[in-house]
Image (cartoon, rainbow, N blue to C red; front, side, top):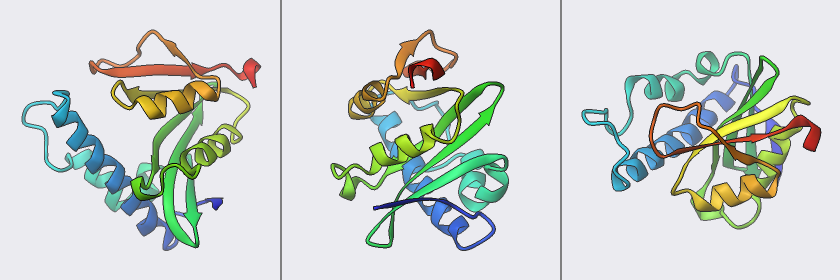
Length: 161
């Protein structure tokens, strides 16, 4: 497995767009199954989400975008937005067909190495395997900064690294 920073000025933009699309489509399907989808929301993706997929270079400007590859094939992605004394972990996704071999953990560990700051993320409450992964890396549940019900907010303090 290789984890590398994506160059969104290259063919990596298409790869990142595809991985983010898979993440977002899965998320929308799960939200509907768990009653967390907003009524009238676009399906499969809302216009802002479509922009992330079609133009990741603009959508993730100022972020670090990491790709996981297994046997030279895309296996996962994570976006890290650093600013204001915190690193926000976004769009952490591992191909479901490759889960169980450490793709998510490797992406998360590399994402955490991008910054010496506190790290934060939000995750849907039904994603219990992801929550276990985050907790195994020192993330703790905190009061929500999200206005969407069902999201668990988590922080890993820089001094706990």
